[in-house]
Length: 211
Image (tube, rainbow, N blue to C red; front, side):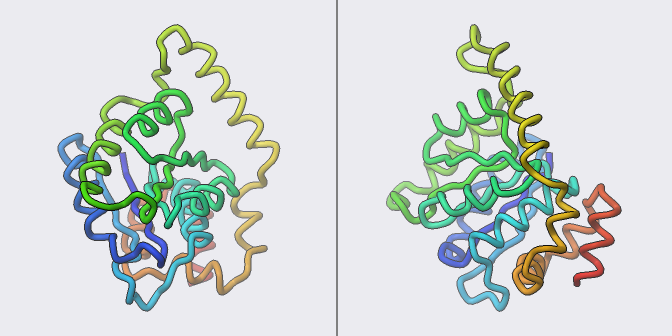
């Protein structure tokens, strides 16, 4: 699994801590982690939580990433931005229990974490336990076990509803503010990571035309 990390500007100073913690958990499981920044609060390219949602949508819709870890001060803005787009199902996760239940019951492909709220002593331990519970078991397994079938059925229903309520990403991107979009894809490692992993030629071509 390709896991992408995206930090917006208010919590960018914590990027190294989050990235190192994520890799410590994900690498032994055989997952690949790509850090799309922001890498520090002083980065030239500043991402808002809205742009984090745009970037998450591009990565997930193109197949360049299978899962996105993002967040903001409360996690709420990043979650809302991510869920504004097709084929992105983002949960708000504050604890290992949240992570496990979101993975097993909702089987989403992104989480938004509050990187300011309650992020104090032992924060890296909570992150470690969140990532462990998120990735240690394949998603969609259900909880409790007697609820597996209806939970899996509901997930398929939700996916179908999102197909109706959301347009294709390639219809959306040209209608976004151009500066907003360019800012979302101008991180220093974006081109290297994205184009080497992108599985959708049409999205890749459009992103090239913008850059």
